[in-house]
Image 1 (cartoon, helix red, strand yellow):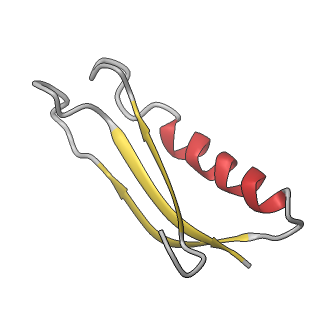
Image 2 (cartoon, rainbow, N blue to C red; image 1 turned 30 degrees about the vertical axis):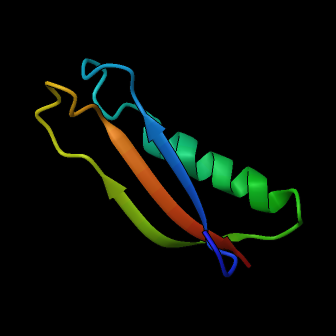
Amino acid sequence: MGRGLLSITKQQATGFPGLGNLKAEAFQEAAAHCGAAQKDFAVVGYEETKGPYIFGNYPRVDLSFRCV
């Protein structure tokens, strides 16, 4: 995204499971990405969709972060 800002977006294929563990998966991916460079990650922004999860409004999380 520029200036060292990275983004991870995770989305369910349907609305049935709700957000489930999407947030945990996004944070684990950020930690793994920065950990590969022996750095920690700092959250810059976090958003998640709100229900009801119908008609294409599927559960989704967006995580913006930097490796520090």
